[in-house]
Amino acid sequence: MSLEDRLYPFLAAYNALPPWAQFAAGTAYRILPRNWRWGARYAEFTQLAKAGEAWSPSEIEEYQLKQLRFVLHHAANFCPYYQRLFMKTGFRPEHVRTLEDMAECPLLEKQQLIEHGDELASTQVPRSQRLHITTGGSTGVPVGFDLQKGVSRPKEQAFLERMWSRAGYHRNARVAVIRGHTITSQARGRIGQYDATRNWLLLSSSHLTHDRVADYLEALERFKPQFIHAYPSAALQLAEYLERQQQSLRIPLRALLCGSERMTLPQKRLLERIFRCRVYRWYGHSERVVLAGEGKETELFYFFPQYGFVEFGSPDSEGLREVIGTSFHNLDMPLIRYRTGDYVRLADPRTDPMLEFPWPAAADVVGREQEFLISGSHRRISLTAFNMHDNVFDGLYAVQFYQEQPGVAQFRYLPGPQFDRSRLPTIEKAIRRKLGDDFEIELREVSEVEKTAGGKHRWLISRLSAGEPSREKKEG
Image (tube, rainbow, N blue to C red; front, side, top):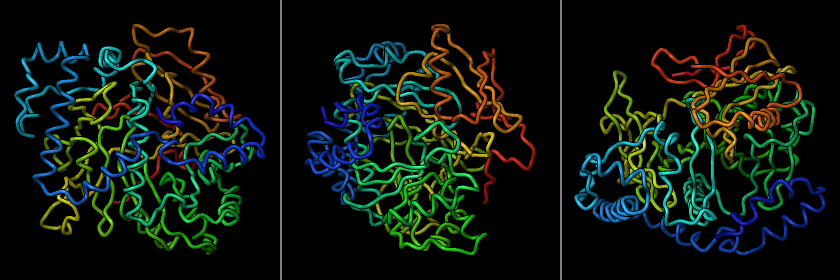
């Protein structure tokens, strides 16, 4: 197990240290060998991420078939849910001789992951190796699942580093992060903190308001990052301010690294014009089943074939296909033919540029909207920040925020049969910490949550006036 996994339970204690103690401990930690910090398998995954870029189609198929057979046989032998499912449907892992044979394997729905999470876990992997995650995803349906300590996090780190390297990123780069990191629950509290363990500046996306944008720009110019890693919505707020003030960022950037929310090409062009650097996009999800990022020369999203096996559903009326993935390497809870609920528009060889890699590629990733709650002091709080790295939303079939006025919202929840209502104070405390002290929140149990016309759950139902937008308009 890596030091990252061993020390993760002590993160809150580290964050409570005075700045000088954080700096000393974090700096000492940063100089440790990366294989100590990320674990023995970090080097393996670093090499895998690089090597796969040179594989031929036949080498890709050989690797994927090997991994699929291993995952399928492991699931059939050690995961009670898959044992029953394969027996019921007559699916035999040994009959998978080509990648096309995976179509015979039953799909895994989010609802099944919610209802049968414990039975999806492998009986061969000790509980001590499980890292439980809860996410609301892009649809507002809480999903709890396990990652594998010593495997999932070093793998993700290695592949992200390889992917970002296409935009010039390197391991010792100075990075400013404007994402869901909660620094304080005070609306007028400090906006950032220095992370000495990585030499990164962590800035809160929840405190990025019109009257504090100048503070963020000052913090960025003082820190002098080479890269900004941000929610697209946060980067767009900074760009909007700079353009309105006819200013520019007074430090040179190598790239903006933007993930977790959808960004259209017109939005990307705006950011590139304002920040005068490349804007790099990628697609992934908390379940860590598949991963795709832009190329070095092109803007298509390339799915790593050595990270996981990706399939695509049938096209809808607009030509969009659902992303369906099978995870590699995480044996604690393998997700097989998992319906992600995210949709892509596949690259068209007639109009899109020549592929950089012989991998599945998408021209656009859709279905991840930028949704916000508006606080009493008009802070915009991205709902992407509500991915909880614990079991806080476990047992809830659906959650949804409802807002009619700034600073006041309902948290509506649909409990499952095993939900323990004594956990409600813990849930409320976690939500209040994310929202801050300029927000009133009411928890309300419901028998159903409002859905879109297409039947999808939504994180947020906003009844705010047009002057208080909670949802970013999309171009294109």
